[in-house]
Amino acid sequence: MNQRWSLDELYTSFDSIEFKADMKKFDEYIESFRTWAAKNLKDTAEAAGKIEEYIKLKIAFYSLYIRLGDFAELTLSVEAKNEKATAVSEELDNKSTELTEVEVNFQKWLGALENFEELIDKSDTLKNHEFYLKELKAENKYLLSEKEEVIIAKMINTGSNAWNKLQNMLTSTLLVDIKVNDEDKQLPLPVVRNMAYSNSKRERKTAYEAELKAYKKIEESSAACLNGIKGEVITLSKLRGYESPLEQTLINSRLDMETLEAMLTAMRESLQEFHKFYLKKAEILGYEKGLPFYDLFAPTGEGDMRFSYEEARNFIVKNFRTFSDKLADFADNAFENRWIDAEPREGKRGGAFCSNIHPIGESRILSNFTGSFSDVATLAHELGHGYHGSCLMEESYLNSRYTMPIAETASIFCETIVKRAALKNASNEEAYTILEGDISDSAQVIVDIYSRFLFESELFRRREKASLSVNELKEIMLNAQKEAYGEGLDPEYLHPYMWVCKPHYYYAGQNFYNFPYAFGLLFSKGLYAEYLKRGEAFVADYDKLLSVTGKKKIAEVTAMMGIDIHSVEFWRSSLNIIKEDIEKFINL
Image 1 (cartoon, rainbow, N blue to C red):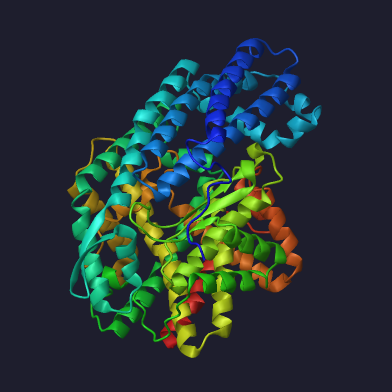
Image 2 (image 1 turned 135 degrees about the vertical axis):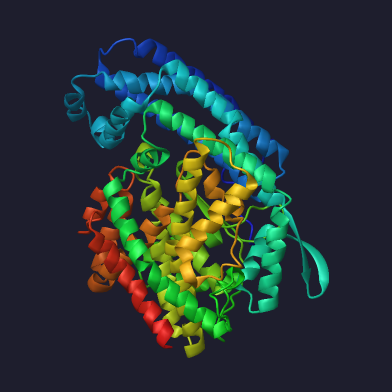
């Protein structure tokens, strides 16, 4: 099977007639949008009609912008040195700022309307976009002047956006010097990081040491990127009147502090249980002071499940079908039509992601597949993101944009389906390995995510005063790991460079992209428990839940399933499911 995705459904090349025509159309859309705003936002006469027209113009513009932008960004994710893609990406970013004034003017104009509620009730289009419009109106209090917002939008392109692209280039092109089977090699960073799952202790330790050594080549540049991005975030957050970047993230996430505190409280309470897991694993592997970082993912059982790409496809589709034909058919179609880029190679970014491309009703998934069961679970995870997107394709683009915490729901739910299915048919050795892997994955989403939350909180605190040196960043990361992992990790073998290899720290528009993973895991655990109780009747409600995530606050979405995310007890109940698995592992 072909393990490289096709982007032809967007454009065949940057030199194609269609791409060039759409780039020209992009300029025309901007000009027509600006002309319309200058003419119609002078007064509030016929306000309902003007709002309807604005919605239509914005949907049309962003449909084109997403097609063009995703083609460039997806190309860059697998070809970090593609100069044409880089140039197009920057050109689109620069040109899109020309609409900032239009969007700010409209938002302020909308905020000044006195009969807003009456207008919504008189129009089907406005009623359909009620949540979007009310959110825009509420955000008025954080807007600066039109002139200031335009300047900021333009400066971001040479600020945080540029820093982010540099960091992506650094990690995507970093070659790690490593000795494999007594042969000196240079391997891409994702390949070396994947060796953490190797059956060979020697290989795991060699990869860990080579990885840390390789980061020294880019540590100063990465620190500059991180300082530049976080400095910009702090400045803009203060200017707009937020108490902190965390408050801004929560508002943008449609989440509240009460929910975050309830979840973090339950997570902190559970850390000791995960420490027991790590200590048991350390004991099995022959360590006395906790696990060294390079053995976090070391298999302790004999069951080494390996999959070809074709076998991974068949396994995922077959087991998705136990939940619903709709989910299985979606996944099968993604494999069949080359929506997935799975082959690790130089110039390709590490990790995995899913991009839902609303204008063409498709998704594209990036992974780095090496044949492990963990890789199969990752594919299922990303296909879950894609399925979430497919449930929103009937919605207007403006009603399809869900926020970070709810974004991990479908992905982790799909991952759970595959892991549970693997356990049913596995041998005792394989079942042990799957259980260990599942707990290990959960530990990453609770323990490691908590360490990342601690790291980013302290990073923001210190960055308010001055830029941080490489040594300071390493110190903060080590302290965060010690607090989160506790006695579970050997303090002499931690990972001081996790701030380099995790791209989420470098997203200026998505700060604290860590706790959403914990939210997704624990909410999905609660949902899966509900599915086991209700069976097939659950499926339609689940799809409905996913379809409204772009037009409701998260607490409203979760309430559809009878879940109160303000309650610490809900989060404890989900963590208890993992606790039971840990007890089972320890007793085995």
